[in-house]
Structure formats: C-alpha cells, structure tokens
Image (cartoon, rainbow, N blue to C red):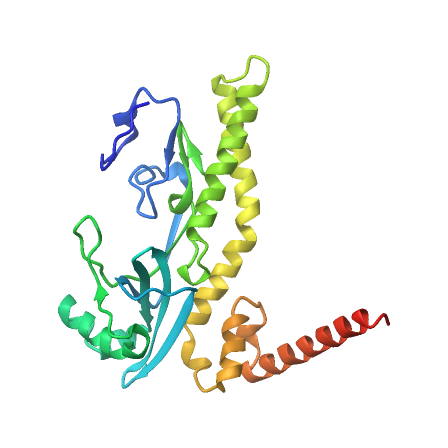
Amino acid sequence: MDIRYEHDVRDESQLAAADLIVAADGENSQLRAGHPEFGSTVTEGRNKHIWLGTGKLFNSFNFFFEPTGAGWVWAYAYQHEPRASTFIVECEPQTWSGLGFDSCSPTRALGRLEEIFADHLDGHRLWSQFPDGTDARWLSFRTVSNKRWHHGKVVLAGASAHTAHFSGALGTTLALGDVIALAAQLRRAVGRPAGGGPADLAAALTAYQRQRQAELRSHAAQARRSALWFENVPRYADLAPRQFATALHTRRAPLLPRLPPRLLCQLHDIRQRIGMAAKLRSLAGH
C-alpha cells in the first residue's frame, strides 16, 4: 500500500493506474471541478462565518448569542481534540460589515470577537491559523449538491458530493456514512461469481448513489431549515429565554418559518405537556 500525505491531486490523470478514485476532497473538490457530468449545484448562504479555534475546552456542543451595536453575533463551540475546541462565529452580512470585519485585519477581528465572547472564553484566546499555516477567512456557507455521484472511475463522497450546514453538526458523520455505504456496495459487486468487472463496478457505484441520495434527502431538508433559522435570528431575538431556546431546538420544524414564533413555542409546550401526561398515565397503568 502506497500512502502519501499532503500530495495534491488536481486531476484523475495523476492516478491513471487506479481502478477507482474516491474524491473526498471537500466542497471545493478539484476532482469534481470541470466535469459537467456530475450536474453540480453550489448555492451560497447569506450569512458570514469564520472557523476559529480556542484553548477553552467545552464538554458539549454550545450555542452562544451576543448582541452588539451592529446586530447579533453567535458562535458554535465544541471540543474537537484534547487541548482545543472549535469556535465558529456567524452573523448577518450587515452585522459583519457594521462591525468592520469586512475591512479590518485578522488580528483586530480576533480581538473584537474575544471581547464579544469574553464571558464564554474565560480569558482564553481565539486562533485563526490552521495547522497548514493558512489563516481562517470570513466565508458564506456553500451548499453543494450533485445529480450524479460518479463519472468514469471517479466517485464522490463527503462534502464533494453534498454539504450540510454546520449548525447541524453532522458533516463528518454523513461523510463516514458515504464511505461505509460505498465499501458495502463494492463488496457486494466483487463478491458475485465472476464479479469485479467494469459492469459490476458501474452497478455498484450506481447503487451507492441511489442509496445515499435517498438516505440523505431528509438530512438535506433539515439542514436547509436549520441554516434558514440562523439567517433569521433577529426574528426570534425578542423571545423570552425559554421560548428562544425552544425556537432554537425546533429550528428544523417545517412550520417554524410560517408561524409566529411565540405561537409555535406555545404549540410546542402544549405538545410536551400532552406527551408527559400520556407517559404518566401509562406509568400509572391507565
């Protein structure tokens, strides 16, 4: 087995001897680019976000919402290794420009964000540099989808095939699900009598695409609704803390954008009470 790290592959011709190339090279996939056969669609979200790190360790997934003179700014924070946590900051574009993040230096932006989230960082600094030496940049989330997941001997997996907004915290889980399903379909193809030929490979890749597109349909819809909720944070900002938490928790509900937030929170509370009453009656033997 020939394992190479930090080896940039821009085109499948660099791997001419390979029978199959799994393009798991992210949303900006170079192996996918230039191939209209995949039927790729990339849609940019409205909000701005930046992917940072910190030495403050969070023992669970956290949402932090902070008001500023230019609007609301919020963060997603969770520990991703023994000594570091991920700290993603997001805000509306008018807040981003109103706070000067569209024109200030990265150092000044970090300092401002450390001030905004000081109550949650407990004196820890924010980091903007990745292990490869590149600096984090403000971006708009890109939703990637593809009509086809394979072409020739290239098959897509993970973010090169599909993306789900980071507010759902499912990106890595869904990518692992892709490669597990792909491996299973390939094993079935190879395991057939006289299997393993080009026709078997094509059939396995088609089955993989069909399986994962069906399995991810619900996740994609929920991710879109979650992203839409965060693009409309001011709609919920005036809710009481408990109601705001309810709106955040139910952000994937299809009815949420269509109903007044307070009404949906009331309906949610009623449903919770009915469910609790039914559970108590069951425990009491009625």
